[in-house]
Image 1 (spheres, helix red, strand yellow):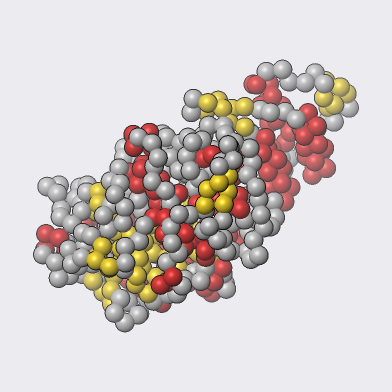
Image 2: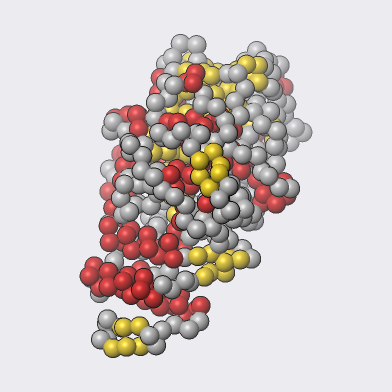
Length: 465
């Protein structure tokens, strides 16, 4: 039995899953927000331990889904044969000795703010497994074909680890946000993009919307008309007293929504999240600076979220093989024109704007920015004018959070095919991210059977600090 505040009488409690969900929606926040806080995944372990960090450090992870070419971005090879180097020319940056592709002139003026890792390497040429390795720092532990779908057996995304070990200082913002959507270019959401065995409480809030659209909304991050804050809080007490454990069928299992409803109340009554997602508060000139593109506006939103106190924001390049975004960075055909017209300019604009904007606001020192993909592209073009998957060496850009700008770490061979010096593993990247966020890579968290796991098994890349 529940007490109905709106009608001042006792009423029968929900008896079915459907009725429980409807009643939750009647609490004034609707289902959309808790569902955003509980992305499509299978139910898992209890909420992990949370510890406060000594500093408000944040991470913005920009992921170029599909695999960006090292040749046409940050490691051009002008001395290689034409069938390897392509037609783009390298240009000088504002740091002597560092050259990048001519298609990224804005970033060329910002080289003093970032470090380039030109020797990142792993052995997985499968997209989902490559994504998993890069964002968790661990090789996919089961058959590669299973990496195409989220599982509570997954290791957690580095953002979920950060959210669990260093939660935001305020519950009025989520700890981890993914936008504009999780990577699912041709079917299921790929593994490694949520908290895995850490449990639903450390999952990202997933937006699933285009921040460049005038109709964009992140969900119901405000109190509905007719509901006062006091009424919302009374409903929260009732829900907590009833200890309702709603379950939502998804991906062949169920997911506990209770932690997400609790956070939903905090987000709605706090108001900070709604303001952070509202790009109309930005001057038009600033929005133009980032680029009126889904990736550019998503990157701007990431800055706003970090400014509001969100610990980690993952911005994914939208890719749907038969829909929005097309092949993304998976350029198996028409690689050079696709790079020149569709890929490099928006990335150049968005990242250059982010770095200078963070610096201007005094936020770059405490915000680690990482630009990566799941792997690089082949040294030689295929018959369709494309470059294929190549995990053996590729480039990652890192900035802020204590990273020394104006640096190149590692090198690739003259044909850009393999590391020539200082190879960097995905685990080394996650270890460095953790270090920049004030987390010791040796720090441990535990899985549902209480086995300890290190934040990262890699080594901090000291050469860029």
